[in-house]
Length: 291
Ligand code: SAM
Image 1 (spheres, rainbow, N blue to C red):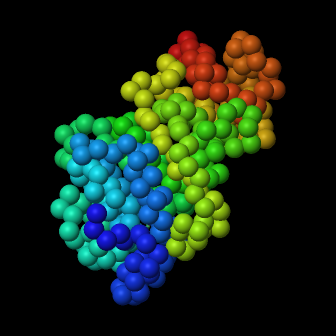
Image 2 (cartoon, protein in one colour; image 1 turned 45 degrees about the vertical axis):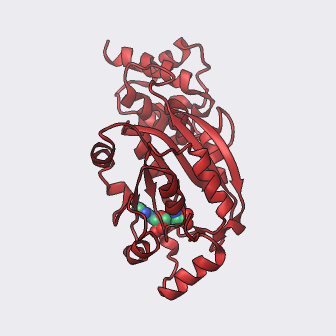
């Protein structure tokens, strides 16, 4: 491999030579540990057959390692001041395309079609922490053709993805991840591996997107609507959350009947339900609405 971009001294040199300033609002914490970068690519299982989408290449530290191992990399970076730097640091790689865009406004399906003939791609990223959840939700809920998602996130977010019913971290993100994927915690990463150092520990997690959902429901959008209601008002009972926020026009009595027909106490909270229970609730509400 060519000289590594990610050593502390090289990173410092690139930043100083280009007069670059870190932007906190873009969640810029660059990786400066070559072992961690090698491990991320290893955990993602990248081969020369793969087309990889990278979110937020920064100065190209992770992009370089992906480019060495993959067939092709498309890296989407929002910060315009990083584009000339990336052109320079990754200049020798002809399998890298840099797009100066916001990932949440990027036509990801178009990239998958154009670069990989519509076949599933891999997503690899050291994610900007301020938009981790919207990015993951977008990748999962839109059912894009994605094989695996290997991402650096805050340790607490990785825990949230894997949390089960009644655990403190359990929420809508946990349900979405567990509905679409098998999740594997790859490693914990300390703040000293980044420049500048984040305040909290991070973790790399791999989400294997399953070809079929783990549970079948009669209406997937209703399933996610119920999940959002259940966690929107955590301190309330499931009954009150559904009554206050549900967009299905059922009376309190009808909702109570649905909850008790499923064998649950009417004071049950949404946080007690796993994906199978949410699926059962979805089907019961669906049957009630559609008579
Ligand atoms: N991949 C680099 C690394 O590991 O050193 C940088 C990771 S840094 C945590 C996150 C990167 O995402 C930054 O380069 C930031 O500018 C970029 N970014 C932030 N918001 C973005 C968005 N909405 N779309 C695309 N890139 C974004």
